[in-house]
Image (tube, rainbow, N blue to C red; front, side, top):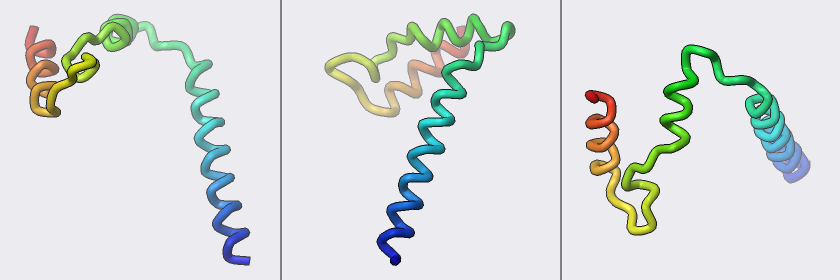
Length: 68
Protein backbone atom coordinates (compact mmCIF):
# COMPACT_ATOMS: atom_id res chain seq x y z
CA UNK A 1 0.00 0.00 0.00
CA UNK A 2 2.79 2.45 0.89
CA UNK A 3 4.56 1.70 -2.38
CA UNK A 4 1.37 2.51 -4.30
CA UNK A 5 1.05 5.87 -2.51
CA UNK A 6 4.66 6.78 -3.31
CA UNK A 7 4.29 5.80 -6.97
CA UNK A 8 1.01 7.73 -7.18
CA UNK A 9 2.68 10.82 -5.66
CA UNK A 10 5.55 10.64 -8.16
CA UNK A 11 3.12 10.22 -11.07
CA UNK A 12 1.13 13.24 -9.90
CA UNK A 13 4.29 15.36 -9.56
CA UNK A 14 5.47 14.37 -13.04
CA UNK A 15 2.03 15.13 -14.50
CA UNK A 16 2.00 18.55 -12.80
CA UNK A 17 5.48 19.28 -14.15
CA UNK A 18 4.54 18.30 -17.71
CA UNK A 19 1.29 20.28 -17.49
CA UNK A 20 3.10 23.35 -16.19
CA UNK A 21 5.69 23.12 -18.96
CA UNK A 22 2.96 22.82 -21.61
CA UNK A 23 1.06 25.82 -20.25
CA UNK A 24 4.24 27.88 -19.95
CA UNK A 25 5.23 27.07 -23.54
CA UNK A 26 1.98 28.50 -24.88
CA UNK A 27 2.23 31.73 -22.84
CA UNK A 28 3.51 34.66 -24.94
CA UNK A 29 6.37 36.82 -23.70
CA UNK A 30 5.04 40.15 -22.33
CA UNK A 31 5.75 43.20 -24.50
CA UNK A 32 7.92 44.86 -21.83
CA UNK A 33 10.13 41.79 -21.50
CA UNK A 34 10.80 40.90 -25.14
CA UNK A 35 14.22 42.57 -25.24
CA UNK A 36 15.39 40.87 -22.05
CA UNK A 37 13.98 37.54 -23.26
CA UNK A 38 15.80 37.78 -26.59
CA UNK A 39 19.03 38.70 -24.82
CA UNK A 40 18.70 35.75 -22.45
CA UNK A 41 18.04 33.36 -25.34
CA UNK A 42 21.26 34.40 -27.07
CA UNK A 43 23.43 34.38 -23.93
CA UNK A 44 27.03 33.41 -24.66
CA UNK A 45 28.42 33.39 -21.14
CA UNK A 46 31.27 31.10 -20.27
CA UNK A 47 28.92 28.68 -18.53
CA UNK A 48 27.65 27.50 -21.92
CA UNK A 49 31.07 26.98 -23.49
CA UNK A 50 32.27 23.43 -24.03
CA UNK A 51 35.24 24.21 -21.78
CA UNK A 52 33.04 25.76 -19.11
CA UNK A 53 33.99 27.89 -16.17
CA UNK A 54 33.12 28.25 -12.53
CA UNK A 55 29.99 29.69 -10.97
CA UNK A 56 31.92 32.78 -9.79
CA UNK A 57 33.01 33.52 -13.36
CA UNK A 58 29.42 33.28 -14.56
CA UNK A 59 28.26 35.69 -11.84
CA UNK A 60 31.06 38.10 -12.77
CA UNK A 61 29.96 37.99 -16.42
CA UNK A 62 26.33 38.59 -15.49
CA UNK A 63 27.27 41.60 -13.35
CA UNK A 64 29.27 43.05 -16.24
CA UNK A 65 26.33 42.63 -18.60
CA UNK A 66 23.92 44.17 -16.08
CA UNK A 67 26.05 47.30 -15.57
CA UNK A 68 26.32 48.02 -19.30
